[in-house]
Length: 77
Image (cartoon, rainbow, N blue to C red):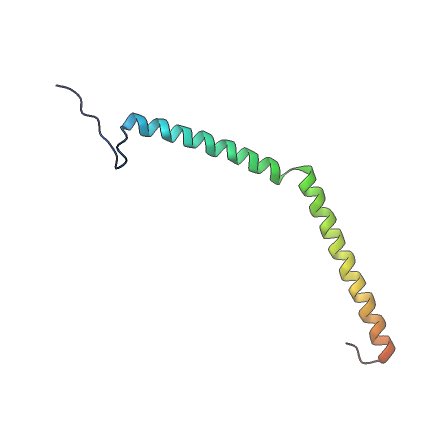
């Protein structure tokens, strides 16, 4: 008697599903490595540091100007 192959709703045999699953896992692992590399890249981290530094400088400058304006008219903004 010939062994029956079980098929999923896409018509794939168990062996085809296992092969596809392995390929999907490989692709996922590869993509995960690329994402991690980009996320942890020096360039991105350096850019983030520059943006945070600029943000702090802008906040300080805003506070300096607001303080000067309050001193000029005694009322504040």
